Length: 84
Ligand SMILES: [Zn+2]
Image 1: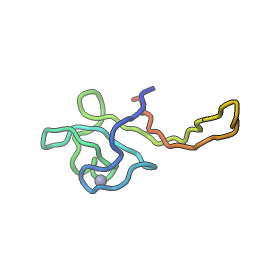
Image 2 (image 1 turned 120 degrees about the horizontal axis):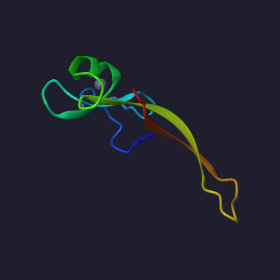
Image 3 (image 1 turned 180 degrees about the vertical axis):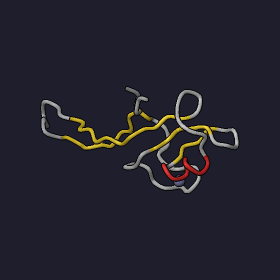
Image 4 (image 1 turned 60 degrees about the vertical axis):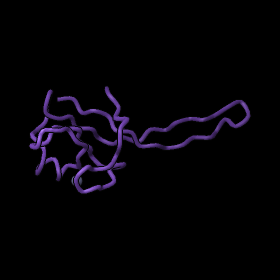
């Protein structure tokens, strides 16, 4: 499983993808870009090795507990790569 660590904004429509599906893929213009689902349909060349990867948001709980403050937990959204 691979986590997405890059930007979470669509390079085309600038939508915030923090809680949305994110696609890192090649565009029909050549360069790669971060895209939302919709812009990927318009500008992308597909999914798969050499074409693009899809990442789905997933909530994770991160414990920041210490011996002094054992219950500090934050919820964060990470994007994990969807295989296939
Ligand atoms: Zn977009």
